[in-house]
Image (cartoon, rainbow, N blue to C red; front, side, top):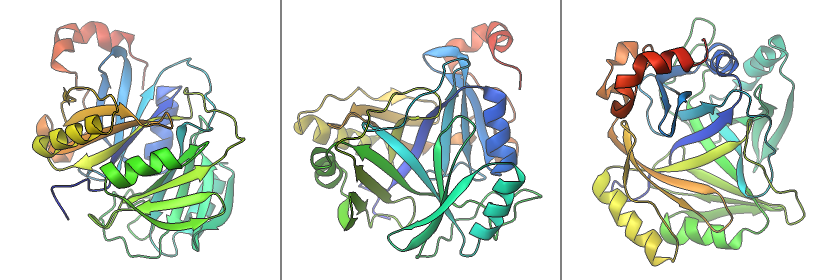
Length: 310
């Protein structure tokens, strides 16, 4: 791992509609661990759920803002549209049976020779499970129904859908240190050798496709991983030097963040490994209690009444 550079994906944040339906799907159907239950920093009446492996290792973390009643979004250009999870070799047959059991339609296919299944979550978020060519040794979270031979390892890739790839590709290569690795029929694959997993970004070029609309079933932003605050601020200078606007450093309790919008319109974040999810809960009970940002702790009883029932 090259620790002074971007080390793949940190997390991906999406929008859902019903909080309980989202929680049940990701923990019960897909078997992910709820590693943190908190609230949106700007809207404390809305949950912020974090799902991942046992400790919420960067590269496994899918997060949601379940805005009740927001209505359906539309995937399309200007959004990160597909989230790819890595599954063990031979696991797709298990997942096809499991999705069928829960009445979730899926399609089978392959990208760059790697077999995958594609399906949507209850809000329409596009997910893909990929049997990657290279081994993925990350220990997964296991449940009584989903053992380590088939459980989700964490992210494999994320797909960005864009009118044109050029300007976004330049951000990936010149600032974030990715390399163009493969190309086929409107799809470009970028990867970084700084880490072995959660290290792939695909761009789908759809010059005549519809624009995406951000609401339930779409991705809000994708976050790239850096080791600590010092490296984070080095990247802030690089983004500014490229002529893009970027936020000051923001404390998100479990990591520090910077946000900028890349030229294709997708919101990118840079996020640190430190301090991590065990900052305010032991590993054994992660995600079991509602954790509030400190500015909202005095409003806990009011917030708890306003949040949807789980």
